[in-house]
Length: 188
Length: 287
Image (tube, rainbow over all chains, first blue to last red; front, side):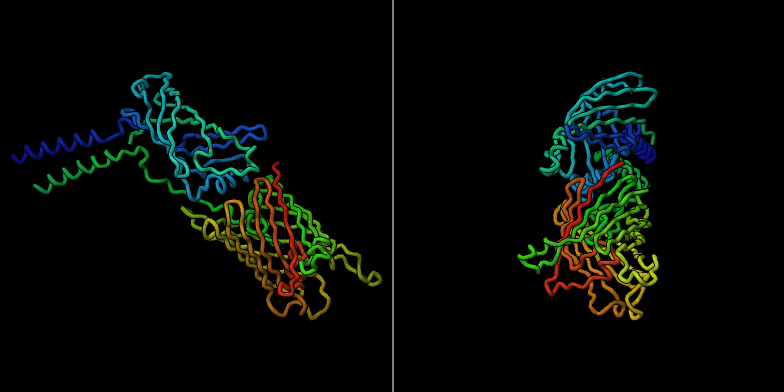
């Protein structure tokens, strides 16, 4: 009798472990790229962050991003300082996150090389302000690597990013955010 | 036996708990070193240098004015009728190594310096409590010789200043700098006075908004080194940063825009109302 109970318990345990082990379906990277671009007649401003952490769950379509603000690199050192000090206040708000879903996850066949599209929708948090964001992403599956590209625009004032009048002509109120990440299967 | 069962169930359920709180990015943060930036808005506190350096291939063009005494009253437009000025700039050979040149109206002085930031305040993998910068200045006064008939040596025109600048950004708003300084004058008026003058500078900056700061700077000259009529320099200023420019507006009792002048040649006293208004304008150009 006891043996049966142990066996049963073992099966249940292993079952749970298998069920809760997401390694089967999680794709991730720590070196995703986010670029932002602000265009005005006076000046174009661009910066890149090559240390973006992002992952998605191939079963549920859940998608996450985590971005350290201070990892954005600018061509000019002074711009980077002002971005962190004055606009993003990155000591107070070090991180920006996105949590959402790949709406048509089932349409993206990760086992077959090809190009797939899906809408992405979710919540973007910056400077403690959370807003809904949605866009269309392109997934290119090739040899087990999933490249995802998407872009959308945000208005800095939505995220309490104060822009003084004197520099207002240099900073667009439609900042283009471009995301480019190569996901690989998380085998851990 | 029951213990094993409980253990197994515990393992199973604990995995479930993790699963319910699904976070795909649940890996522990990779430890990195986080370097402190923007301890000061610019590479000057008020008169003296801060630990900040300009970045590689950037040129920080500086114009500094110190007007006459506020105590001059309306007749002198509270000092605006007179001014001493320095025009010069700092250039970044690397992010940490800077050189600078300037020309001041005070004693028709040319000055040059080499500045190197050799410690950076950081947290994380490398923990460093302070940022430290070394700066060596040389000045050449080019006034006509007061006694042209006697034998005059070019070396008499030279003076040097060496400073160790140590600063800590204590909070996001508050930074403090200590600046042990030695000024060397090749020539002094009398053997009673020292050629090497030791002093200790104190700089404090407090952010008022993200773009403005209140700065305080004081240089304490150790006693029995200078003429009795000399006094220590005290300055209070505001930094206003507008993107490419930093405007530093300040009140000080020195007219000297370089180290030897404001540390060892200051005579005016705050308590007598002999305070000057002044400003530094810094504009950074990229190459």
